Image (cartoon, rainbow, N blue to C red; front, side):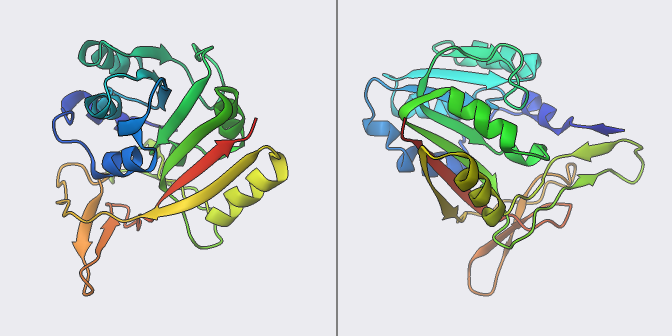
Length: 236
C-alpha cells in the first residue's frame, strides 16, 4: 500500500519565527515587499508558515492558502487569521478550490508528491489571470530523467510516496507543447546555511559541506536535492 503521511510533522513544529531560507528567495524574486493590491495564493500551505512570512514583509496584501489536510488548515486559520484558507486538491481540482483569480501563486515543495504534473498545471492556470506569476519551487532533475520514488522504513509495510524528480527538460516540453500563452524559466537556488541531520526523521533534508565550500543537500533516501524555481507568467 502507498501513502503520504510525512506532512503531519508540521503539526509538531513552529517555524513561523524561523522562516525557511527559500522563503526569502521567493519573496525577493517576486518583489513581495514592494507589491501593491496583489492577491497571493499559497498552495500546499500546511500550517501557514510561508503566508506568515510574506505577511511580515507586506501586511497590506491579500493572502490565501490551500491544502488537502484539514488538521493543518485548522492551525493555519488560528495563526494567520488575516488570510483566507481553502480545503481542496490541486491535483484533481476537487474540494473547495477558490473561485478567486490571483496575481501571484506559489506551489512550494508540493509537486514531488505527484507522478504526473499535467493536471496540476491546468488547475494552477485556472486560478490565474493575465500577467499572473505561478511559482513552483522545489527539487527538479537537471539531467534528462524523470524519477518516481517510493520508500519505507525497514520495519514498516506501507510505502511512503513523495520526493519524485521531474526533469527540467520534461516539464519544459510539456509546457511548450500544451500552453501557448505562457512564458517560463527555471531559476536555480542553492542554500548557504548548514542544516543538521534529523536523526529521528530520515526523510528530512540536511547539508553536507563540500570541498569547494558549497553545500550538498540530501536526505535519508540518499537523494541529492537540486533546487529550482519554475517561474511561469500567464500572458492571458
